[in-house]
Length: 359
Ligand SMILES: N[C@@H](CCC(=O)N[C@@H](CS)C(=O)NCC(=O)O)C(=O)O
Image (cartoon, rainbow, N blue to C red; front, top):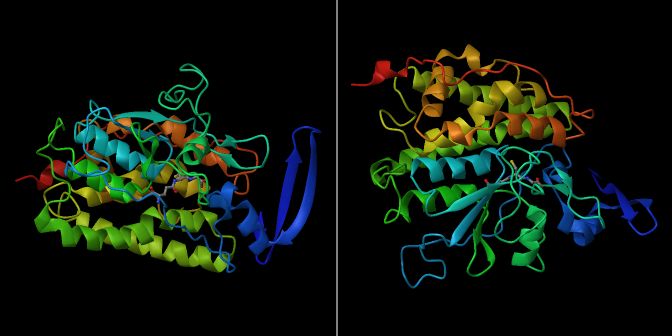
């Protein structure tokens, strides 16, 4: 646990089954124990949540001379159904028709100890195909945790053990762990083997508009809900809430005039917004205290979320069981008893009114 300059560090000794407790300078903690961090530690001195950047940033390219060329069956996508960033990669896999070329595995939804020798809590694989519906054992590396994959890929990795992970089976390493880049590769580089190559979610004529929209939606909404939920002081929470609702109101206004964020064509910006909206009323409104207004109180945003959910392939990327189990069960500082609220169980496959914009 990190509190300003000093942090409380608990070290267990699995041999003697005992625990030692220390207060140590945070700088020392970060230097010595950065191998075992999670989002719960990403806190500034002001109590605001600050997300750190991803580390593996290689690009799969159509260029045959590339270190990571396009090859069917070579890459594996590790996800958690709970995670919005991983889910946007899975959404691309499905709607671009790449599931024949790139296989994927989801971890279990609730964070567990990743090693006996320290306290790190993170993503772990199921021990069998029946332990947790939707989660599977790792079919590629036989790893027990996502942490293990990062340790195979790098002996001195000091970042978080996040999903998504795009894995290269041939070079046995992480290609990329930044979803914003993975979705761009899935959109353009695999078109020779994609089932739905014609779908371009980042067309040249809309790229600058998409980039501009992505920026304020990431800041206010995608990452904004985390900034609400992980704030440890009132002021950063208040600021994040204000920014979140400004951005949601702006989306509602745009979507009152057109079917999608960039007009009459679905784009990357919509998929990126969708993964947060689908979690909003079920999780963020309660768990992250984003309750000033619910998604279902915004007529356009609510119907729009159903519209995107009903794109062929999309519904299979939403596992609400995993989503709820993860958030309510993996953040003990926010929900110490891990109780999962029963509602609201919204049916996103019910009719929507977005066809009214179709020409
Ligand atoms: N920048 C990354 C962020 C991914 C991320 O934060 N994933 C979360 C799950 S939603 C995670 O794996 N967290 C593990 C941890 O915090 O230890 C991306 O978009 O790919």
